[in-house]
Length: 210
Image (cartoon, rainbow, N blue to C red; front, side, top):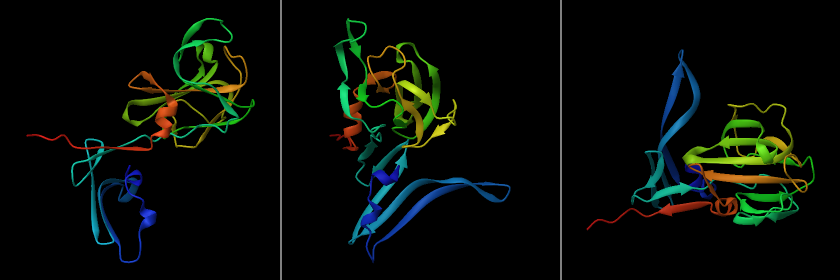
């Protein structure tokens, strides 16, 4: 969470930082990764305070850092179709919503998870053919459709890291050519994946009261 609020690569000699964290212990030994609750960074004489509260990262002024953490899941030739509520389907020959973005790519091109998450679906999903669905933090989930095959190690319930191989692009389901259909949903509602990928971080100012 904190890596997206402060660039620790900019630290110089004389700068300092402190971290408040929790560490689980099992049978007298450290267990799992530390859970960071807050950080203090002093750089060029300027203090920076960051704390985690109710799942959000906040600074000393009460500003909330909301991160959009997704990356493009595939190396592609071109975008063959964009997110739209009305598109002429090249196979079905009808107009209907296209709730995602299509990345044109050769069959067998590696597909990676756009963000950290947990696999909730792996299998055949209607017109999407072979599909993977991953649930992420903050109410997001991603869908990867028209796949040719899955990574052999991929399992439902598995925790996934951003950039981890999950499958290979293909032409399964109702498809007019080899590509990856990439869908993004926020609280079960479809959103334009390109708008999420482009937004790296948003700082929300605290509400003012009179």
